[in-house]
Length: 413
Ligand code: DCP
Ligand code: MG
Image 1 (cartoon, helix red, strand yellow):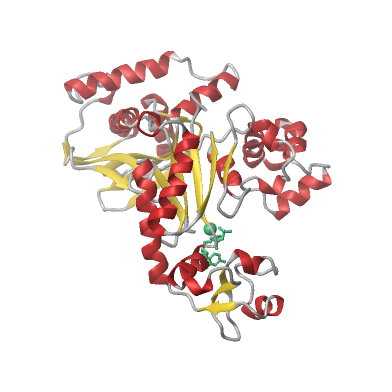
Image 2 (tube, rainbow, N blue to C red):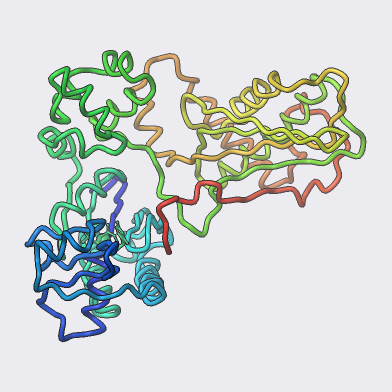
């Protein structure tokens, strides 16, 4: 997988049930159901022995017990599972700083830059599985691929206690026979619509083509088409890192009029771009924050057609957002530009090769990197776009914002 991204998706096997078996070794080898035993009880986790009888998570306990009357029912101990989850994530974090938790027992791990320390990705995946087993006493299943969604599909393929690698270059071959429902974001309604067009597998979807998919589903169609080509530019965003970054300024005197506001936004777009470059990130979503003299705050956001770290693209987006703000007769005490939805830049480069010729010239990326590097070394005023002007700012350095607006909803840790 050299030269490519290497992403692991790790998912613990029958997590709650396995923790209970670890705690009560007499349960090993038995069908175990963790969940409420009452009349309305639901199965949270079923051991693989219980699954042979058709028992599943989210099943009413009464149904599970009808399928497997000899199952041992164990009431859940959530505090214990949270503690074990922390121990498991601590092992993950030894292998890479780029760990993104999806739920209590599941994470993406980006192995970028770990090769010198840990060797090739497959070996890392094996070592991680051994470490989790030795140190926490549980098994997990791991998928290894060049993009997130493939790693996630792969981890489910050899459960429990499995390792599935999708070697670089075999992604399309792997995807072709898969049912479309395996793709992220392809729910029952989308599946039904596609099946009416004779699309059952990812290969069928690819053959249907981008134009037809966009016509049927808009942006979602484009997204599905890209997935069918194994293109998934989503970065592994570590939980500890910011999921948005931005810059805002509070002004000594209210800023009045669109030209002056645009200058403020240019200054902020430039700072945000510099920080994106410094962190090797590009962002797809731009957010404008603006507060008037009466402390009325408005925020607006938009999604860009492609991820960027270019101050001009960020500034243009912020100015478009400004057009939707009523500026007549108002003075503004604060403006801010922030970005979210980061993508891995190396993936972007690859996409550029496939993109139509209307993309900005590569010169722009090089220019942004040079400008950022100069400002990094000589301070922010060293190479500031002349049009940015110099509104008198208060709290100029303290206004860097970091937040995590995209905390995965499913997370239960
Ligand atoms: N969980 C729950 N209710 C659900 C699904 C899951 O309480 N409807 C809890 C119990 C699971 C844990 O979350 O043990 C992890 O969920 P998974 O979907 O990863 O399922 P398991 O880890 O139990 O099994 P698998 O081996 O399929 O991952
Ligand atoms: Mg699991």
